[in-house]
Image (cartoon, rainbow, N blue to C red; front, side):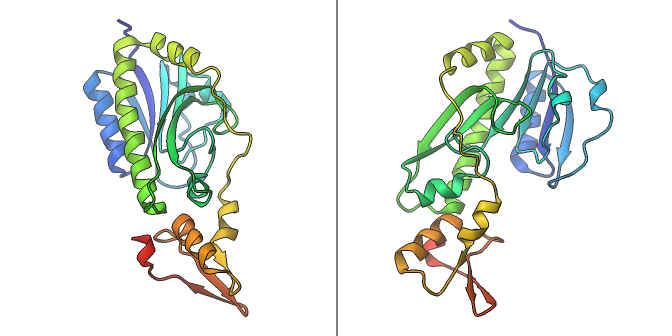
Length: 232
């Protein structure tokens, strides 16, 4: 049994599953240093380079870690990505828009370029006919959390050899060359009066989300979708 127990954990501040992930790590007996994030483009603490850890684990953190930090662990820097390798970045909307039959999550090594490191594990699940963005996101985050629990339990039990075996097993699994950025979502959230009913329903299903609604652009004005029965 491997006894490498020192972790640097990056999680989302005041986020239920991030807190549960930390509690799980501590229950397993890992010695954990924690960095919470609450928003994008937040500044990293200055003293992280001084830490001696065996692994870095990122779960829904807003931070994009610099390459210098990724090299700190004795073994691996690992991210839990809420999407399959086919959708690096922010691609969940397009899995719905393109009528895909399944979605998934990816556990991977972190590298200088976001969502490009070697893949450790993927877990897929079906997209249902009545799914919308809100439903699929909730199921994705639940799958990501469960995968984190299972993965770290095995990491504690078997150590770095567990990660190495996973990497070898998935050495032929690669990220899509298409990287989905949030700016691409903007144009799909804006509709015009010329849109047909089928396309409108696809847009509502795939891009309408509480706080980020579909908007109609008309004669220099924007009208916000307040409610949608199809989005419940």
